Amino acid sequence: MHELSICQSLLNQVEGIARQYGARAVGRVLLQVGPLSGLEPALLQSAWPLVAAGTIAETAELVIEAAAIRVRCLDCDAESTATANRLLCGACGGYHTRLLSGDELLLARLELSIPDADSAQAKDVSATESTREASETTHV
Image 1: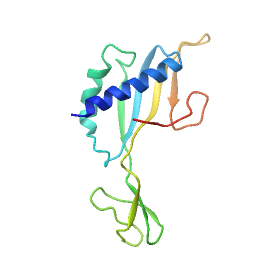
Image 2: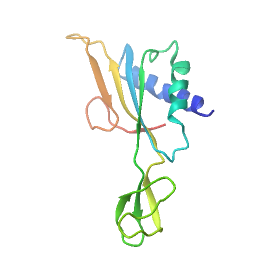
Image 3: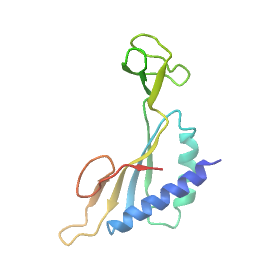
Image 4: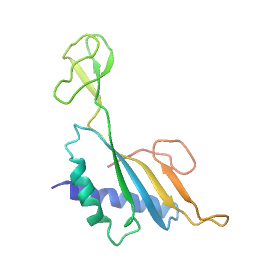
């Protein structure tokens, strides 16, 4: 079960980001997992509480979104969605395709509780938006 070691690596990244922003707690962790990533989302869900116990992310909800499989056709240059066992072009049906997405594991967003002089509200830290709070997509 390599999902346990993946969760440990994920927790290290989450703790680092939480420290960077001075968070007192992590409320939610959003992952995007492609069907070709080799990971089982259910096993990630069951491993997360074991890894997060006793940490700043102990009560964090782990949310997993499925990423779409997308390919680019090398024959007609079209981009289309595909299925795991049929990486065919959706436009011409060709099999000369290049995988664009579907094998990724991305830490897409964190919700952090950050103490603030004006209020103690949760701050949403997105790894996919270019904001003051976050500036990079993290590959786990």
